[in-house]
Image 1 (cartoon, helix red, strand yellow):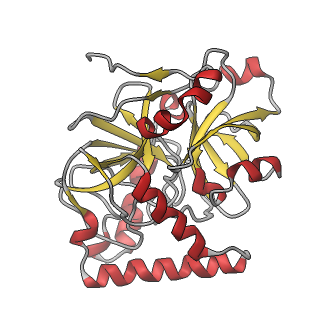
Image 2 (cartoon, helix red, strand yellow):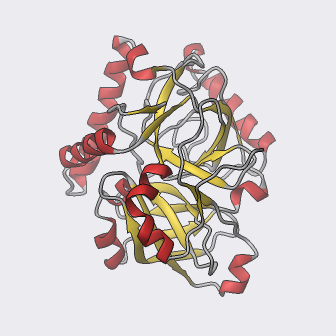
Length: 316
């Protein structure tokens, strides 16, 4: 089921952190943080079904970190006929002014595998009714060398079927992963009650306090937080959204929702609940913005760039 809901604002705050060296190291990090936190805070926006771990070397290859003057987000390499370095991420990472930020040389890219540095060169397609963008990046490393370290994802032109197993990869900035590259699995496209409707009054207050902190951060950088929120509300109303029960957090923005076991991206996170410290039932849901909606509005530009679009899903 495709959902149109305002949901909770997913903000990508500037965070510091490093990727965990292995799944064991990541689990030790989680356990250590949990011992220091109150018993009620042993999970951050975890659905009961959802599990998080460090990604494998192969799972890291399509992922990049996007940095702008204000925010950090995730992104991923988009498969195309010429093996150009095309990257998808969320428009709000550049405060919905992605093309301007690109021209101003304000978009920095670092690959998750190999830590190669790049910059936005030009915008290929920027959704006007959703929160997605595909841009071309230039890197200092030779193309032949870079291609041995990275991998590409196709964009699905159709929504994820109900119950499809999903994987999410990004840089969540919760107290456990602290901005490290993190993979979330054992979750799926669902049709559950929105997590927003399950928040207690205390959790709503915590969410508001998080928003107030972000407002002050924006103000300190000379940016209008209310205008930013207004854009979010617009895209939450006009974008094609789907529900899921995967754990996402600030910093997951721009990272791909994948069909587990397949190099096909179906969307990007559209909601999170900062400072909410308990598990949600697996029947609850947040939203993700679909690549299907983005492709529908930008197909010609994507096809001109040779982007791989999936109109019919494989049988297995």
